Image (cartoon, rainbow, N blue to C red):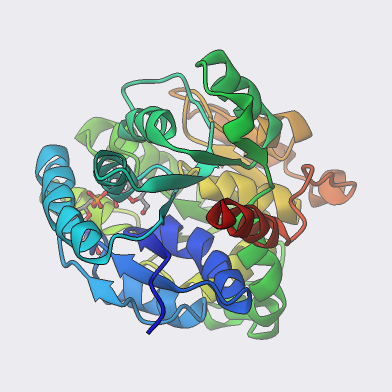
Length: 363
Ligand code: UD1
C-alpha cells in the first residue's frame, strides 16, 4: 500500500461542508489521504446526515470525543490525534474553519513536525470572547499553508506577521459544496414539506454562546420572533446547544413558528435559497446567503466575514434585536437580484487548493 500523504480532519458540522469537496479533489488527483473525524459533533442529524448529503466517504478513523468543556474537548482530541499522527506520520494535515477540533489537531501536527494546511485562514472578528477567534488565530500561527477565502484574510495574516509566501487566496470551499448541491436541493422542494411558500418565510438559526447560553438573551430573541410570527412564517432548526437552554428554562412558548430538529444539509440550503431572508448567528450562513443573494440578518456585533456586509446581503444587528422588526418590514427580495458574488467564490476553490498541495508535496 502507498504511504498516506495527508490526513484531513473534520469534527463539527461546518467542517464537513468545507472538507467534502477537498477530499473529492484529492482523490481525483490520486493523492493518498485519509479522513479523521474527531466526533465533536456526533448526533445523526449533526454528523451522519452531512456525510450522506455531501457524498463524503465514511471517516477512516472516528475518534468519538464528543462534548465537553473547551479544555476537555480540545485536550481529549489532542491526546487521540497525537497517537494517530505518530502511527501514520503523514506529510501534511489539513484542517478547516475555526472549531475546537481545528485548533486541537493543528497544535498536534505542529508539535509532531507535520506540515499543516488551514482552509479558511485569516478570518478575524477581532473579538477574543469568541472561542472561534482564539481557534483561528492560533491555528493560523502554526500553519504552513494558509488558504484564504476573502481578501480581508490576506491583510489580517500579513498584519500578524505571517509570511506572504504561505498565504494563498483560493476562494471558498463552502461555496464549492453549495454550487454542487444547490440544484438538487431546489429540485427536492423542501419548503413544501413544511407547508411554506417561496419567498414567504424566513429561516432562523441560533447557536452562539453569546446568544443562547444566557437565558434572558435567548428569551428576548424568542419572544420577539414569536411576536413577528404573526406576520411572517419562520422555520427554526434548533441546534442541540440551544435546545438544551430552551428545555432547561422552559422557553418553548413560541407556538407560531416551526421549531424543528437540525436539518440535513441539502434540505437546509434548499430552504434558505427560497426564503425571504435568514436570521442567524452562524458564520458560514453569512457566506451562503451572500452567494445566493438572500438577505441575512446576523445577530452579532461583528463578523469575521466583512465581504458579506460590503456586498450588502448581510446586516449585523448586534444586541439591538428590536431592529429586526424594521428590517423585516423593509425586506424586498427584488433589491438583491442584482447580486454580486465575492471574488473566487466560483466552485473551484478546492481544485485550487489541491493543486497547491500537490506542488507542496513534491518538494
Ligand atoms: C461548534 C463550534 C462552532 C460552530 C458550531 C457549528 C467550537 C468552539 N464551536 O459549536 O464554532 O459554529 O459547532 O454547529 O468548536 N451537541 C449535541 N450533539 C452533537 C453536538 C453537540 O447534543 O452532535 C450539544 C452538546 O450538548 C454540546 C453542545 O451541543 O455540549 C455544544 O457542542 P460543541 O461542539 O461544544 O459546540 P457547538 O455549539 O456545536
